[in-house]
Amino acid sequence: MRVERGIARYNRAFYERCWRAGSVLALPGIAAASRPQVEIGAGLRPRLALAAAVFVDVSRTACAKLRRAGGVAVCGTVDALPFATGSVAVVHAYEVLEHVEDDERAVAEIGRVVAPGGVAVLSTPLHRDRWQEFDRVVGHARRYEPAALVALLGRHGFVLEGYAPSGMRPRSRLLNRLGLYYLTRWPRLALQCEEWFLRVFSPWEAVLIVVRGDAAAFIRAAPGMDGAVTSWRRST
View 1 (cartoon, rainbow, N blue to C red):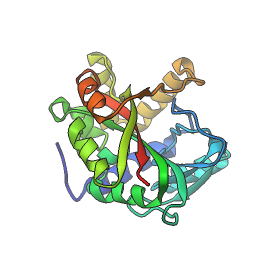
View 2: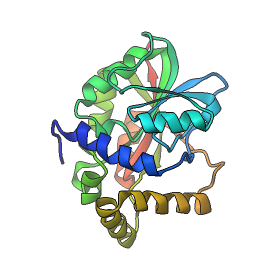
View 3: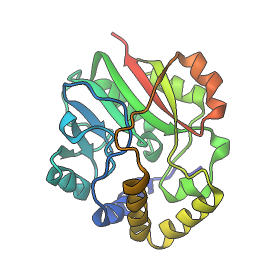
């Protein structure tokens, strides 16, 4: 694993270069309620409909492109969210926590803005022993042990309500190697290839199906998942 002071700098530079070459394309997420919700760190790959959320991202390029596509986007970071305490009903943060050096602070900040009884939906890679070069290249600081993830969220008042398998890493070894080759040498070209693939093959109306389950059920099921989307209820 890699945890270093430069990881924030690495991620900003890597993704800013990608987003300058990319365009906004939606990915499958969890169906949003009618009221506005917050999605953190979407870049150009929002999981919520543009009209259904306020987007927060560290990339000015991503925020500008989300606005041009019709979304409401503000520049900010997961550890200093631009919302009042307890003012947000639902926060979504897909593939975010593993990129920050101080995930404890990030979860504390999510806990600050989520209202009592509100929800946080997160996605994270799982299992430290599954760390690969892909994780380093895309800017991960860690992969999570399931019990450690439950403990982290629990320290900030969140109780697990459901989960679903997830993962950004290609399952094919060949695709993984090709992806790494292009990401390390020509990240813009890699992003353009990804966008072509998403336009051709992505099920645009797909919604992740979250299985209702508590922490114990999640930990039992976790060995069969490379990553997970997890839904957490803020204690009242």
